[in-house]
Length: 461
Image (cartoon, rainbow, N blue to C red):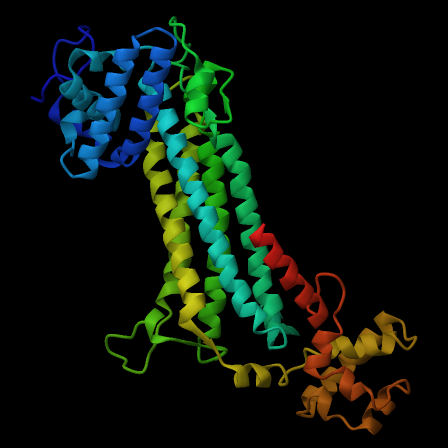
């Protein structure tokens, strides 16, 4: 049997070894040790500040906790399964260091508000790190976009050639997605940064604590106004996992495009050796492993969001052991998002080479300028729907004749409609098709250049 756990005398025997292993969370919540120590130091200072313990006792607790931190950093403190969780592990080692005063640390505190505090401190840090990674990702997108304002690439709807666009405009779409991710995490942060410390197990405490004092020490913006809510709320975790999932959606969409662009069918980009692998039996292959892995890892983050929702949906107030299951999903989602952002940033920065000749050819070999022919007629007084139908027939007969619109002779254009003149050829060149779309937010070169200026200002504020 295992050593008897530090429960009350209500219990006569220790946990069954298998149940002890099943119940323990130390294998993963050790991730919170830095935050547990920091939170405990703030709690000790508050106990001394309010006179619940003496200032000397508070100082001894804080110094002892700092020693635990240093021992962990140096690899001297590595608690095992018998500690059950990181909170007991730290408290046990603290008591070994400072003696019986260590047993006073848990005064006016429950593991329920303690773990809630630790998780928020952890997530608060991770959100700021991810936001910085998003800025780095955006910066690389801008670097590439600024060099490719007048590089054209086929634009698609339904994965069918639609209209040519500026490559910079295409990349700026992902910049805007990342900007929403950055802003969304800022909003999530505001609800993560609320302190549950002092809520106790569920009903508060009889001790004269000062919750706002600990919140200030830990740089929380506010405290939970209801103790039941404080220990049982995981909305902030759900919101983070939702934001993380949306980040992964955006990275996965970009990944899918890179995979297509690198294929022999598209040939828009070449993968550099530093970000690609080969086949074990086909020596000619170069595989897009980075975007494929990002696309695949997206599912695990989605899964953690779904799991968190399912965990919460049936829990009565207040704390329930089910909530132990929140941490692994949060930890893994944080690590996955950070790894994918790093990998995609490196891939864009040094793993891709655009094939400019292929792109230049690609935008001339289809009917993606058909809308511009309709616009040409509409600008000359032909109702747009009528112009649309006229051009539809032209495309049909051109396909049947093995021609593109640029191949039609001026006589053929004028037979279609007398409004056509020789300037139709300039109007349907890919460069003019893109340049003409100068409405706000469009792919016109003037708009794209201004968008780049605005984007640089946005990430440098």
